[in-house]
Image (cartoon, rainbow over all chains, first blue to last red; front, side, top):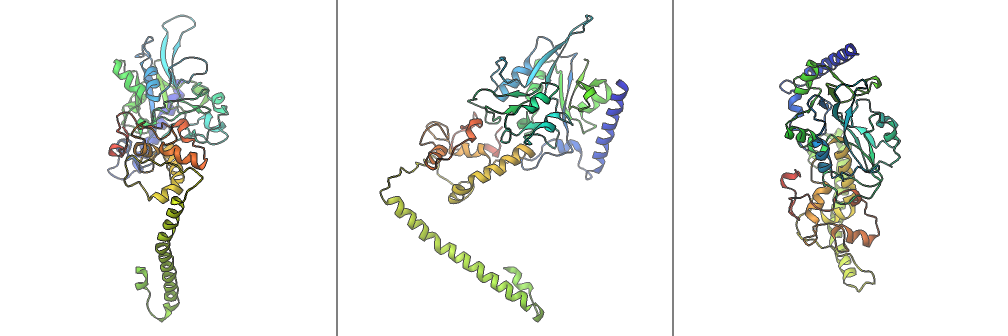
Length: 243
Length: 161
């Protein structure tokens, strides 16, 4: 398993390095990732991702969850029909040993099953790897909810009022973590990452997986990390360390 | 029409005739548009002044000024502009504000209520009620500017932060 992961990471790194070579002289991937002008579309040269360090994630902390609810105007209720974009999951070894805690959200797969099954094209992957729902096209069939192996998607059952201007959402559509796309487009990191850093845990690292010089790529190259359900070969943009 | 100067010689006579015909046609269209405009507005005024059994929409613009396009164009085409911009924003991450719904709302929200819907005199709702066209945008989108943005001001720096 670990051998396969190492090989995959190596191939990823080579791909990123080659992408770097093909760019114009003086234009690095890092520069593309930072400060994209508002009129410029998202670029394939960037692939946004997260690295969650379960060793740094405190089991009694849910700062990322509350930050997500606040940023995206979610109610924060935990009824069976309320939307939740990021959850804290506790993993316990059946034979005992310390329990691990980590946030799980949309894993922003490179091969997203939700996009495969969507009958209207509402589920889509943006050029920079962010998997989104176009609510203008979503008919609320919830095939994607069934298809997602991470149970990352929620359906909005009730009418929504007082939405955040940056995060439009309403009844009858499926939704999930957007990687705070409205913040990324304005050069800000996702709300959960910011909140986690504010608590001092710094368990979530956000960055450009396509840039071999980025901190996230360096850490993935240096330490053993894994995807959730790697057997499905979905190549998620969210990776986990210390699980 | 600067291209006319590039035609020369007898071999290009046909091209020159074509260009002249095109110029004549274009001039006719322009004259028609310029001449037609006052007639149309006069007709509209006459209709407005006549006692009408149909209640007209009250379009209260708290901050009269220049919209992103001509008023008549916006009346007919605002939905197309919004739809085009929404696809660019959602799918490509283009975040310009000229044709964004957030920019519309920031400028056109009522000074009293801070919203573009919610009453028969609200900017969007007044016309949509009159035309009996369902206004779906605000089932998901906020009908008020972001917190910290003064009503009737275009978004600072063009981008809501």
